[in-house]
Structure formats: C-alpha cells, structure tokens
Length: 315
Image (tube, rainbow, N blue to C red; front, side, top):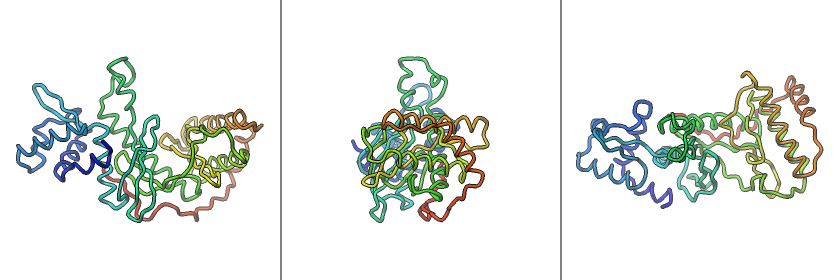
C-alpha cells in the first residue's frame, strides 16, 4: 500500500493516538496502553479499534504480556510527519517513493501551489535494527525509540543546514519546511553523480562543487562531512551540481574540522580524477579554500528559503 493511501485511511482520532505515542518516545520503549487511554477522550471500545487499525497498517507495533504497550514504527513516524506538513500547507499531496538512501526514504510531493517537492524521511538505524535478529551490533544496545529520536535530530540538522546554505548558494536544495523526521525541499530533476559515466564539462562541474564547499565553509561555517559521488545530483539540461545530504555536517569550530574538510575535498577530487580523467590536486585545493575563506565575500542576497518555512516544532 502506498504512503498516501495509508495516510488517507487514518482518522482524526488515529492521528491523535499516533501523536500521543510519539510524545512519549523519551519516556517509554512501549507506551503502556493505560497511558494512551488516559491521554485521549475516546470511547474505550473505539480506541481499541483505532489501535487495532494502526497495528494492521504497520504504523505501531504492539507488545503483549503483563503490560500491553505500543510503539511507533518508522512508517508511523513518517505518516505523522506527513500529517504535520499537510496541516501547515507545506505540501498538498504525496506521490511515489523515488529513492532510498542509507538512512532515508525520499518521496515526490506537491505543494499547494503545484510546485514539485521532495520529502526526505530520515530513518536512522532502520537497516541496523532489522539485522538485530541475526547479528549482535552497536544497535543491539539501543532501543527503537532512540533511533526514532535520532531520526528527528537528523532532519532538524539537515533543515538547518540547507536553510543557511540556500542563502548563499543555489547549488543546495531549497527548503520548504520540516517536521519530526521529514524535510521538504524543492524537487531536483537530475541524476546522481555516481550513475553518470560521462559529463560534457567535468572540470566545470567539479569547480562548482568546490565552490559549494568553499561557500559552506567560509560563509556558513559548515563542513559537509560525507561528500561523495552519492551526495551530488547533476541537474539537467544545464548540468548544475546540487550537493545533498547534510545531516552529518560539522561546524568549522569543532575539533578535527580541518581534517574532515580535507577529507571531503580529497575524496571528491580523487573521484573526478579517476572517473572523468581530471588531474586536480586536493591538497592544493584545500590550501586555496583555507586561504580564500579569510577574505571571502559572501553574497547572502539569494534568500531562496521559502517564506514561512520555519517549521521547527513536533520534535
């Protein structure tokens, strides 16, 4: 069943129950059934029907035993985030899933004005959590609630980063809003860099990626922290690079920041050298960025963040 179809099956009271369970994440792994009953004025029989539906739709998971409890699933958190974005007029409709990252799922959407958007749902630890039944890992000592909370933190960080960066560059996605674990941005019509065997102007594209690195460091004090061919979309037909995936960014004041900056530069430099036959020296580029950042003129007239997009609540 598609996300939009699941969304349309949930009643007002159903969303209220999801919100109650979400609000209890810091306190409970599984929210006791009696706690949920105490937080909402709904007939007990009807409330049980609502909980049964949420379980059937895989939006919550139920734990049986001496104390019955419920927790959100990643899908449940996604739907709750979607509800908030719809209620605030950020999005009007959600479409198909168009991408899956290491710790995210991306869907196409429409704004109330008909603009094409992307919604990125952060799902930190989802793959690790699924493997717990097979292997012991770092995730084994963590609850699903902690992963959901971290997913919210990642969304907040990414939204903050692109909101700042979009004031200085149009080579990051324009933010429209965020809620919980979801970030809504402009839709970019393009192809991930790693999928492209050929570029008509590889040196020009490389230099524009370096421009984003320079601007983010000099003007916003931000370092991407995971820059690679998987985090760059080449927009067509103009072949403009859009640098994506910013939740793991660090600030330049943090310990080891310069090493992370150099790692980002060297990784993308080596990729272009190997893939497209360039001969760029990452050490020279690094030194140039550090030198230029001291007197870099930051143009913050490109205020591309959409007015009214500051949706920081529902953490």
